[in-house]
Image (cartoon, rainbow, N blue to C red; front, side):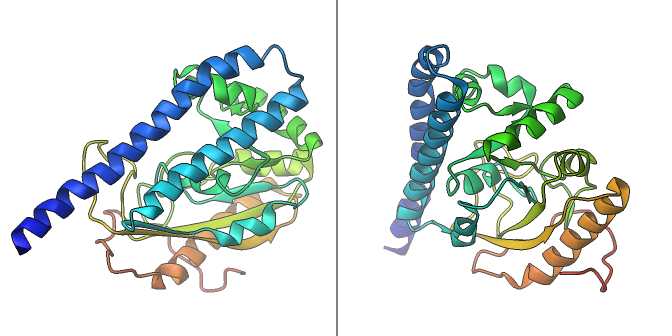
Length: 273
């Protein structure tokens, strides 16, 4: 009986992961012709609002499906206080592909900096353009669009690492977040994403089944004022994340996995929180 139960749980885990991915993919694909049709018909303001609401609703339903299975859990309530916040940059660490979904699922007016090749993706491209997501290249144009979008009361979701984390606790940061914050004179709200799995991390194969259950917790960190010195700001920001993520490593759920290979930067015990 135990062997049968283990076999059923193995199959069930696969169904949970891939049926939800399939559902999300079908939903995005179905939205593509609608978004293509609406893009020239709606004003920029209307298209932005509708496109971002659709992304929030779709990602929330996807995460709800995972949570309903009892094989994933998500603690995202801290993000709700940002819904009515004035324009700011939301800056999370980036352990996995789900990170953007976690944030956008709670916030209705987020501009996401998206890799340029994804703007032409069959599943994501049309919806991303309708929502006025910001292409990552060319960098100067990305910064200009991001700064202009703050005039609409938007939040900008920008990962300081630039890509998913490959070494604990964080990768070296890119300087664009400091340049944008200084140019737009908007604060930077740090967001700390903690999980007990490497699922969908850098190099994770789509067909590799993770060990379940998996737990995710998102908590708000320090909000930094717009910087005057970009280089000094980036150093302080990176030190802050490194310190907070090490301090927050007490987030241990039953599925704790071994740490990634590689060492992160040294952490100063005097980093401010």
